[in-house]
Length: 368
Length: 106
Image (cartoon, rainbow over all chains, first blue to last red; front, top):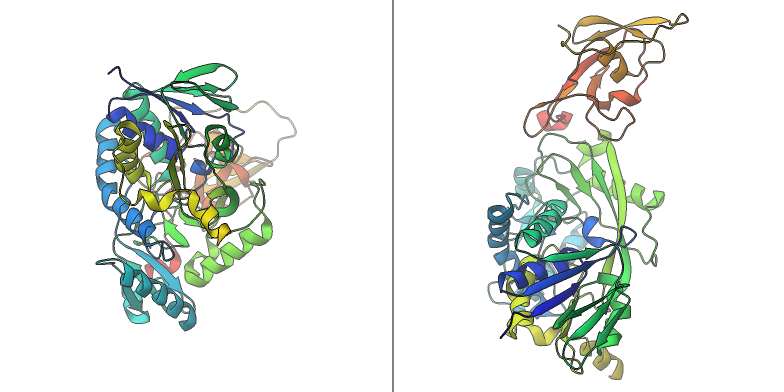
């Protein structure tokens, strides 16, 4: 059988992780990346490799996320070996702070529920005294935290760059500058139209918010909507925070990244002063020593959210060979996408839990 | 000691001079100079060392973008020297590595 040609629509973390996995399995791959006016969630994200408390409503998502966090060290070492780029992966465990006993109890209840569903689900509840030992700079208002020993973080921009580097090195072809407008199913394969027409045996939709319009053309359903997150980063300061937290993390170069906002702002990816102010004041409650630290940049990006927040992975029933891959955790899930999802697209080997991630779950809910 | 490299000022008859303290040594500057311009004009190339590798850096973009001119100005660390106007008597030091946070040292 001749080598199959897979077209991947989307050059962000989702598309590039898949493209890397596809190249590793002998496919010929063309990635269609949009222009610089695209909404690029992969250039604005927070950089956590995180499983803690995810998937309470869909335990298979918790399992899938955990698989990815466990596969992450191997992905990082492959990228270092093949590109020389250190993506800065550290998995010292992650903390989720609580500013009141009620908040802590809610977090613990969610984790207890997950432990009830999932074998060996790892977490610890950290009281105020032990937290002071782990993070001496924690503020007086923080009553405690939950700790996920397998959580971590990465430099997301270096990750995106490394994936593009490895893609080029393994012979992938990238077509950039024009959005894909149309995908036309042929009797065998697909025509991808970005102003010019490109033929491929298979097509993978990894276009983030752009999937919503493309999916219907190949018999798929991508009901994704934007959710805006705003992020601040400070000047570089000496290391004071070893553990990533859900709201604040210190990156390997010393800057402190802060952000946790969630807003329905349509396709507006601008920052706003009230939200930036709220993020900053909350960070100072968690870490009072940040009060005099200079913010050097702030930005916003649009998360790609499905109705329940979980991924959609699906092969088109009407047009086999067309795949939809969308999620809002392109960093955490990069390892699973490269290692477990790419073989499914290349060879048909279904990854674990696939049945939980079809878009049909939204239609069933509507009918019920 | 100034570095071998130097900028030369254009002749300006209306130039008003002031004096900065750079690393404990008096250097001459002009009213209207940014701190970065004053340090460069005095023949000094390096304004900081990097937080990760500790290598030397000097002013590059001179317009507030590159963050390579970070200095300690009147006791305040990590200031962008190209964005601060020089004042007579200002104390200016190179920024050495990452800024320590006060509480982190306590």
